Image (tube, rainbow, N blue to C red; front, side, top):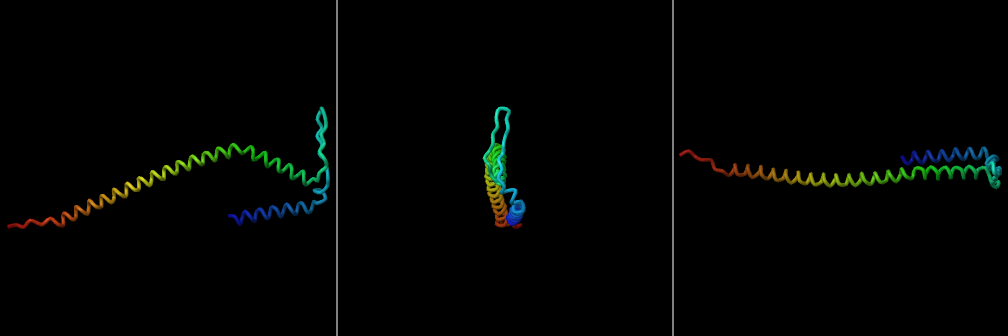
Amino acid sequence: MRKVKLAFWLVLIGLLGVVFWQNQTFFLEKRGVGIDYWIGNYHTPELQVALYFLIFFLVGLLISSFSSLSERFVARKTIRKLNDELTNVRKNMSGLEAGLASRQAADSNADRSITSEAATVPESSAT
């Protein structure tokens, strides 16, 4: 599976590289972004378009990671709780298996003692 993931990411990076290479003039062109409010205007300094793409991608990545942060904490807590429960169940199972093994050993010893007593009892002879 790791090789498939690696191949997927290499192909994706290769395709992004081709898109950048073919549109190099657009991505290297400098532009500014302006926001017009009712009360004022704001204009960013002129940057290359590729930097704007990178900045907006990273901002989106941060927003998505912060929005899923609480879900990850809940999932981690649930996993920890289920692992503790699994450990308790395994301990309980090992205790039950040990009890079963000791009971089977005791039963087999009782069967052996019964068969050995039957073999040592002399048959009464008719006189």
